Length: 412
Image (cartoon, rainbow, N blue to C red; front, side, top):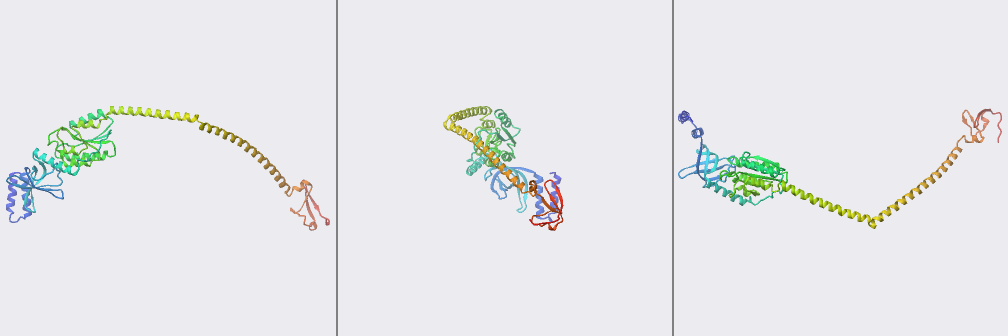
């Protein structure tokens, strides 16, 4: 802050000292501290560390002569477990906590000071996770994984070595890369996010596996793999995980939680492709040969059974019975045809008789035998009617009609 601005603020405070409120004074002090000092980086020993239910962390940072209050908000991620007596480096800005009128450091980051402290943080987290059972759960690695997820840096040598090995040994596999920072402030969260995201993508496959790792480095470089977020992500994964952090002798927390630990990323790629394309082709050839032999054996067995059945008495008896039934069907067909013809002849005779009888019942049928009908005005006269009532009538014969005049009528 320019000197003139500092002087201006101080003069303003002095000129208004009899009128300014405590809140306003606190605000101006806060503004003065922030603008005067800016961001500070302080090393000291943690005392009175208290994580609140809200997720915020409160503690005092002290040395042999002085101390200062600090607050680390819940939104700020930690890569280790702080505790009293631990030497740490705090980066943040000075501010004033108005309700108490005390200045404190608003922490932006909190990291252990020195490798010794990192080792202590590692041991504390390791013991905590051991007691929770994080190291007990071990999922089996698929014998022939076809979907391989990788969480690592997209620009490092580790990913190039893994892709080269996988392409050479298992070109049939589908590779899913989630690029993540593998060191630095945000590395732990990115690695944990990558594990969770690949779980969403690969859970539907039964033959999937994840590789999480990076190349070698110092303890500080590898620290992201010693953090609680990464440990929880590995533990909660539904897909088996291989930890492949590039170091031979030392272990990380990720190694303990993972289902399998290998020394390098390249070793991880070789591990998941133990059944490479050549062994796979050989295995398929052996399966094909076994299937061919098995099918041939089954076919020969059934062929023998068919031959035995064909020559057996039971099979011949069935053939004889079929022939007998066939002959009986032929005989039945002949008998049925004769019966049908006989029934048709009888029915025709009956029909002719019915036809003749029907014709004989026709009113004009007697005319063919010489009889005649009498009618008057187109009305047939019955035999019961007397002709005395008529003077003229018509005489109907088979071939002619005569008109007659009645002169006399005598009883018959």
